[in-house]
Image (tube, one colour):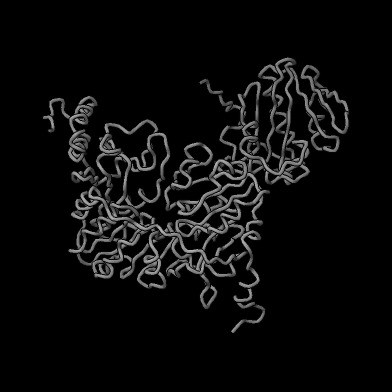
Length: 628
């Protein structure tokens, strides 16, 4: 029965239905758009957003997606900037070529970025199942970071896929919490796994030897995890608590090997945050009370993971050095994938009673021409899992246990599971670095100086305290946010045109400073690392005249509080310290506030009105007498 004054969810649902084109029209220039993960990419919304001609300077964020990513193509780089929290094949070239960004972050911690508003999601594009009898849609095959993005976004658009399975767990959103709904009959994207190679089976056999009856497993996607599952038929009462899983667990569930009876957390349940695989897998999770989907802030929380006794975490790597450092997100300087959940599960399994964190990798790459056990990581390679976190390393040649071992013991253990062809070389390198015994038996541009003295707390006219400091090259995001908070009037006063976007290329012109001839100052709400930028001031010296052109910009709601005056005083002092003879400026006649700031600077102002613009010149040699 509908309560008085309320509306049935079916009516709300109908009222929110729209076309993809109508939905993506909600995205404005300069906004940040989240795109749903994995196999649950909202394909129609992505296509329609990419087809818009009137969009610009839009940031796209997501983890791995299996679908299209036109926003990462070179032809769209003026319209979109992609920020990958995990690099998939569809955006790898864009990241490598500098058209897209990569943010290294633990998968368990991404939701907190959204919820804390450190990363503000303006619009979330998600894909969900049709609503149930109570108006709840399931996130289907991907709850992961989608749930936190949808719950944190200012505006939520859901592509309602009639083929999306209704997964169970902490993975629902009500129609009332969705702003626009786009029906879709697209099939859920599939990622079928091929048969494991002989190499994968050899590695898997070693891993399987580490798994005991009653273990709880974390399994990723790929040939090695699937191959491991093929060696577990002789075990009993296995459980699953994982970031994701694929088709390989279905036969073990059907045969009762995976029954979750021995789990010490969520007994009787498979816990995951997303799945990728075939339609058979999606049918398996549909309305299946055996499987609970939960967001990554839960599934990947090391403290939650550790509550599972005998937790076995299996993760892959690109290379491991002789001290145990693990690189798994880059090929040297080339970013390849991401941190993902490797560290989350490694640390969780390490703290589990009887737990075993495992790093698995083939011993060689590129047709056995390169060793993946190396004396040192390639230049630019990132350490995802530190040498202090590593326990087991497995290749097709065996298992090396490193935790609590000395450097000598680690080096020898790793050399032992390296490809035989590379063992003499590795041992020679280990000797050269004094990692092993010397007699070990052989086995068959100039940077500008930041003027810290200009940092200061400033009290405004109303008593509010703000923080002033020199501009930094890392302030790009703050400058961008400042711009999009300005009224059209303020934009026109500063740039003398009606700019609607301020993309990276233009912001760079504001950030190329040397703190001498080219100077920038900013006012922030406080000293915090994520503090809001309230105003900014620049000067740029003309070498012919030794005068510097000055310009200012202050958020509308912070104008007339004394920020412009404070910036002017410090900017003048800096210019004088650097030998600059005075300021010039061009100010629109209608910009009375900025004219007051210049005329109150303490020096004589020479002005000339020309077609609605005042041309100002302020020589520092002509100071005005202070007003008594």
